[in-house]
Amino acid sequence: KESSSFLDLKQGKKNRISAREERQIRKIVENKSKEDVVSYANATHERTKQRKREKRIAGSAKASYDLWDDDVPQNKDTKVIHVTSGVKSMGGTAPIHFKAVTKTSLRKDVQQPATFSKNSMRAREKTKARAKKSVKVEPAQPGQSYRPDGEQHQDAIGEALSIELRRKEAVDYLNAPLSSGLKAETMALIVGSSDEESSDDEEMEESERRPVKKKEKMTRAQRNRQKRAKVRQQELEGRREKKQFMHQVFESKKTSKQLKKVESEQGVKREHLKGLLDEKNAKPIGVNIFGARAEIDPINAPSLPVALSEELKGGGLRRVKPKGSLLTDRVESLISRNMANRKVTNIKQRNHGKRRMKGGKGRDFILA
Image (cartoon, rainbow, N blue to C red; front, side, top):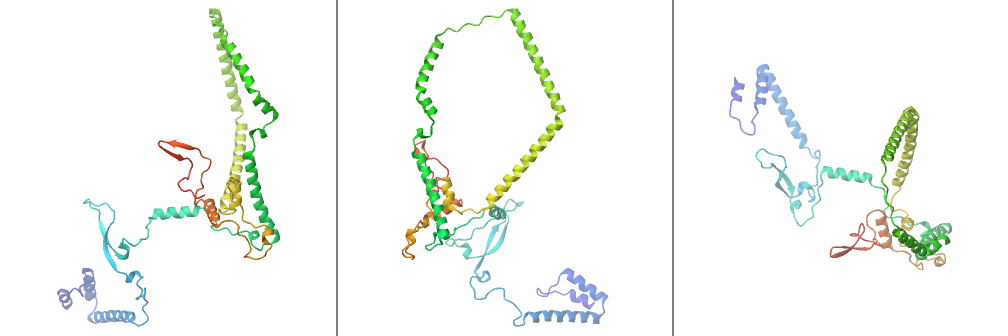
């Protein structure tokens, strides 16, 4: 009775108990004696006091942030804002939820970090995984030093010489006359073509002047003979097609073997091409810039910066003449890594309405 009267009293907000807790207390009071209930309550009280005492022990609690650091999110001034969740609602109004953000993130004069969705981040990771390996700054060759080894210096000079020889061959090919690569028979044919054209024109004029003979009308016997010959020809073609079809049926096993052989050869070829492609993709881009550029466009390719043997006789770094250009190296590296576009040359200007523009891909971002 005392317990029931105690539970029926009006409780304050601090010590208010729920209906579930009230049922548990009634069950304990009904099934336990008074001494057991008192001892159980005292033990629970002692455990609660011990927990509070452990929390208040000096040095046992670990701070999760620096109390004097203003950059920590816990120490920043926050503001509660409402954010639309974007979920459909019954009333037609998009529901909102409240979120505490720092006041610095709401300032318009401070650049805020960009936010990306999960799909965007996943796409970025896939693109990064598929990207080729690249060398941002290619180290110089040992032979390009101001005090190089003899063999390494000769290798660097040989590479620079090969680039210059390619440039000379390309220039000579452009400046060479058209008749230099033609045989004598071809030249004679080109030179004598005008006389032959005049004679052909005369023959055409004579043939045009000749009267065209009118086709005579066929007799009934001739038409019947022509129909019979056409029917025989159709029958002959039908027998030939039937014979070929039967031959193909009997040769099906042989044809299947040939197809399997062709498929196996194509599979080997496909694997070989895949291996070559994987080997090509495994090579990093941004390496051997000058040699690769000389293979594509030897005329406009930059020269490999290397000093000659006579220029290195001084032996000091102050007396060495500078070679190459850092800006050229950087631009060529960006182009080889597909980060910039090259200037399009030898493109005819085309009229597009009232303005004149140059054709070619990548004309908006021209660096070299």
